[in-house]
Length: 121
Length: 108
Image 1 (cartoon, rainbow over the protein chains, first blue to last red):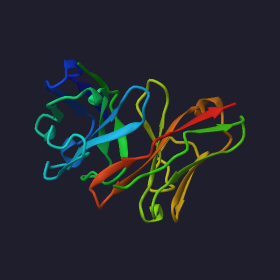
Image 2 (cartoon, helix red, strand yellow):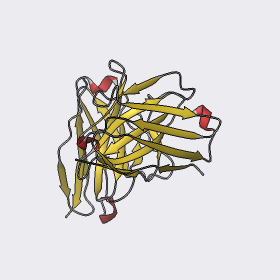
Image 3 (cartoon, chains in turn cyan, blue):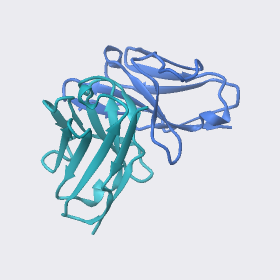
Image 4 (cartoon, helix red, strand yellow):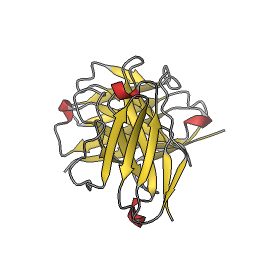
């Protein structure tokens, strides 16, 4: 069965960096686009970034562009999110999620359980 | 950027029908997906491509999309349907995934 397990979350000071990882199993990782979606405490879902199956295309929400980098290692079935220059408003639960297709333009059909990130001042 | 607008809350009596709106400029030209999220859990896809259901999702969940409004309909609502519901599209103009603000469904 499809499994997505995030790790790397924690408490970090504003301006510092953090790297999230997502271990994927139960499907052919190289055949799917992948997303990061976050949810601030008590708030709604916010899309963060997407990467095509082969890493050829990457897109970011405007608030993280230039600070966050999404990457995909198909040999290790791992999705990553490098987060630099963190801000207090980046505090959220971060979900790794699978797109239904090779791109990022279709529904998200599987989600991980999320990893919390807290940015403190 | 493209904006999806949902009502913050919808209340419905048990056994009745809940309708959750998702408004967007010419949303009828896009494919709309809906997610259910219960407290402390990850979201679950309940309707995709306007009106299709993933396997395992009850027929009570249905969707429609035309003009400037998409709608998720939940028939014969029960306590287990209490959750937040989010609509989502892909905006090809900005190459962004867009979520609506979410609607909390309360079963009276």
